[in-house]
Length: 115
Image 1 (cartoon, rainbow, N blue to C red):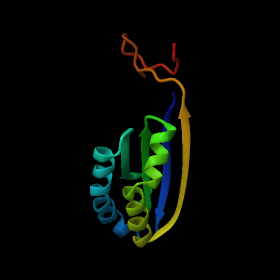
Image 2: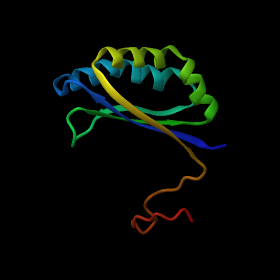
Image 3: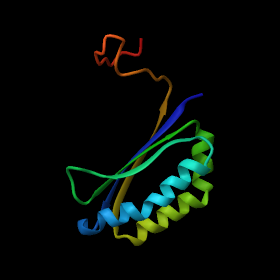
Image 4: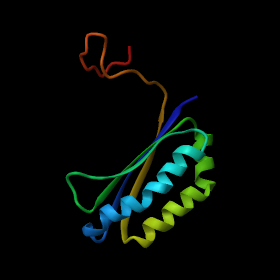
């Protein structure tokens, strides 16, 4: 079974509303993490380099868990909240991950290798 990562870039119309929008999303983020089986990570955060951008990172245990999320009220609540918050665009991608490994080895050196 493969992990599924979702990454998204959400652009909003008014950068001055971004922090309030992220704060408003926090209860939905928490509910998704706590209540949806297979959710390992669900994070919507301010991009530190672009003031009109919210970065999204999700990690799911399986395709089935992600599919269940798409039918869950949390997903629909987040979409509605973001849409009402001045969403300009959203680009989302999912990635199937077939292997995971630590970034740092026992020698504390970062490596891109999975061996």
